[in-house]
Amino acid sequence: MKIEEHIEHAEHAEHAGEHGHKTAALLIAVLAAILAICEQQAKRADIAVEENAVLAADTWNEYQAKSVRAAQASALELLAGTLDAPADASRLAVRQDFMKQMRVDAEHYEKDPKTGKTTLANHARQYEKERQDSLERAHTYDNAAAGLELGIVLSTASVITSSKLLLRFGFVMGAIGLVLALFGAIAPGLVVF
Image 1: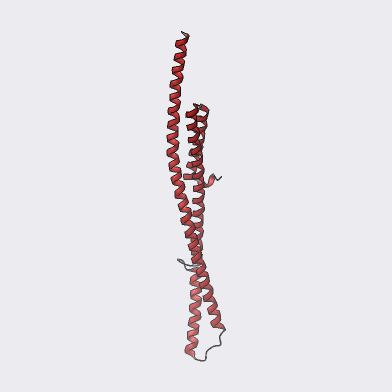
Image 2: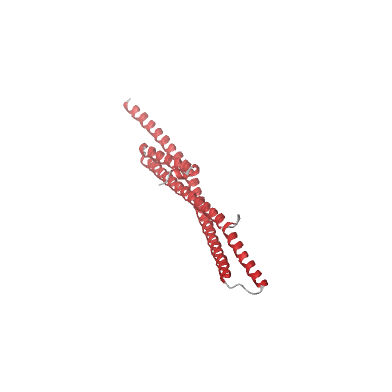
């Protein structure tokens, strides 16, 4: 009777171990799938960081070029105003037209609704904000990937050692990774490490 009980307990333990291995395998598969998605989203966010950084830099360069042109137009207007008035009325009219055009050009460079400095500065700041948002998203997805990778490693170790504690820790790390991945998708700025 005792031998039969030991054999029965051994069979139950074997079935329980197989069940634990199946649970670990399923957990590893789910964590790996979520990890693949996180890494893909992190890469997308990294690309968005680069794109927005380039767009911001280009827009600030255009802003600087407009500043130089506006300064040149203002300087030319001032310079033309300091010259002695020509005796010839037609030359005086040409100089006044030139000064007026320089004033219009300077105003255009400063305040044009499509390409003026104010508009360009607003666009550049928007690109910088998008760059920062993408950077936060990338960091959140990277942290999620780290949690998921730890979950996979611990779950794998639980299969090798038949340790339920490692499987639980693997589950917890995977859950943390999943929560971070959700924050990466919904509100990346809330969780910053």
